[in-house]
Length: 391
Image (cartoon, rainbow, N blue to C red; front, side):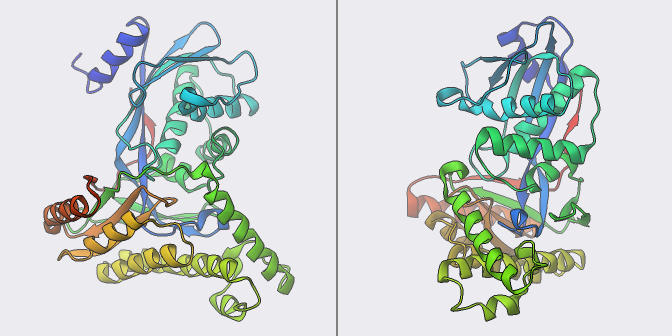
């Protein structure tokens, strides 16, 4: 067992037996530097793939059945059949819905699947806003493809995984998570246009910058309803602006002056939701430009403004995220900090000088423990490559 994947292969063998050829698939998590709740509004996002990841050890089966085990849910082995309609489940087996959904969508797309035993190893926090769900979906899809000796266009795969999350996990997510998990580039962040999926890669210099992710240890459930409410509010805003200009398809098409003119015409809550999305699109594009020019202080200012907008206009932050973002900004050498992900818990992301990292981790850890009586977990990362079959 001198393979770099020896430990997870041993865990696979302990559950499913050591016979047969095994494959190993890796899918990274992601952090979004800026551009939150813009993806489903056909706007711009600026994520990067990160070092914490999902790895799957898989092996084919002669019969059309899938058996799943996970490091996050020890002791459970869950089975389902590919020979009948794959259905989502509730209760203690709900974590398998991400994989079930992928199987169902691949089959619906006419892609033949073989049965599979799979052990999912996850170093991403579940519900931490770092896209563990997309990583599991993409890794599951690549596992099926590896076992079948199949290939698929990666943009199509991203859309299939997105549909799986909509239909099986009940989370109406945008396309960002799947796109960056599949298509991340080492040493770069990706400015993604969520309308036409056009990508621009911007270097993230490891010698000059570190990305520090601090997990508040407060879990969120995007499917709990708030996410859907925000989407409906955005749609209400689009309907208002479309009456003025039928060419408007999404908040992506709305300008800041149009938002200002709508004050008092739209209900206050919907108006603030629109103001967040429109201003966040502008901030995201500007942040990518500034990062490309190494104007890190300006990138940081945009990150802070993004957090304030998410807190006040979109109302998806939490006291813990506000505190962590604020405390991070007190540390010398930190350019910017903001909540990242869907909100209501999860993580903040900070952009910092390498020499500031140790002080940042120490300061926010102590301050958070003093304030909330719990220790945050911290990841220090650079931008990594996207998902692939590694063995």
